[in-house]
Length: 342
Ligand code: NAD
Image 1 (cartoon, rainbow, N blue to C red):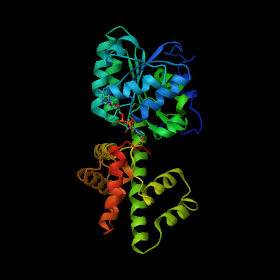
Image 2: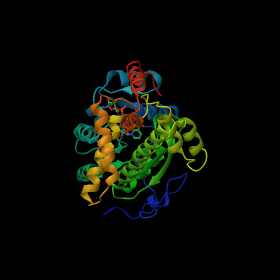
Image 3: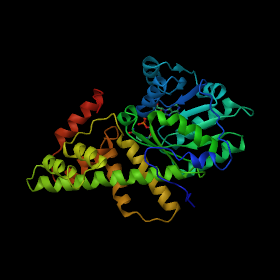
C-alpha cells in the first residue's frame, strides 16, 4: 500500500507533519558539519554548487576522477578517497547516482564506513525503484541509521536556478533534515513515512513526460508529412492550449530535433521506463502506453543513441513515418562527441 498522507503544497515543505507528532522538532543536522556527497554527474555537480554557495562544507566522491576534479575546482568541496571514507566522516550524506545498483553499492560502502555506533542519514536523490528504497530504509533502520528517498523533478539547469521540486519520504527526522538542505535547490514536498512513496511519484511523473515526448513526436511527424511547418505548429500549441513547462521544453526539443546531451540521457529514460514497468507489474497495473515507450527507448538504444537526450525517441518516430533524419542523427552524434551540451 502506498502512503495516503502525501500532500502537495506549492512552494514549501509541509513542516507541520514533520514536527507535530513527536513534539519539538529534532534535527540530526549541525549546520557547520561537513556533508558527504556521492555522484557528481549532471545533477549532483549542480546540487554541490548550490550547497557550496550556501556555505556548506562538502566531502565529495565519484567513480569518475574528472567529475570530482570539476566539482572540487568549481566549489569549496574537498575530495574523498572513497565512499567508505565519507561513511566514516559524515553523518549526513547525499547521493545522486544513475541507478538502483549504484545506490545499493554505495549504501553498502557507506554502512561499512559508518560502522555500528555512528548515526548516519543517507539522502538518496536518484530515480530508483520504490522496492529498493523500502529495502534500504529497513536495512539502515536495523543499524540505527536512516535512508531517505528524495527524487527530484528538474533538469540540471533547473537545479542551478534553484527551481527543483523534491519529493521527500522516509523517517520523520530524516525528512526534516533533507528538506532543510534540499531547499537550497528548490521546493520540497512531504510524502510521509513510506520511503518508496516519493519514488512512485517520481516514476508517475517521468512516465507522463515520456508519454508527452512520444505524443508530440507523432503529432510533429503528422504535421511534417502534410507539409505543415512542425516548429510553427509546436510554437502555436505550446503558446496556447498546451502552455506548460513540459510541452514547451520537450515540444521545442522534438520540433527542432535538438537532442544534444547535457540534460537527461536516453539511457536514463530507458532505465526509468523499466522501473515504471516493474512497479506496474508489482501492483497489477496495465500500462499499454508504457509498452510503446519501452520499445521506443530500446530501439533508440539499439541504434546507438543511448547518450542522446531522451527526447531523441522523436527521431525514431519520424523514421517510422519515412522522414529522413540522418543529418539530425549525425549532428547529434557530433554534439555528443564534442561535448556540445544543451
Ligand atoms: P549522471 O550519469 O550524469 O551522473 C551520475 C554520476 O554517478 C556519474 O558521475 C557517475 O560517475 C557516478 N557514479 C556511478 N556509479 C557510482 C558509484 N558506484 N560510486 C560513485 N559514483 C558513481 O546522471 P544524472 O543525469 O546526474 O542523474 C542522476 C540521477 O538523477 C539518476 O537516477 C537520474 O534518473 C536522476 N535524474 C536526472 C535528471 C536529469 O535531468 N539529468 C533529472 C531528474 C532525475
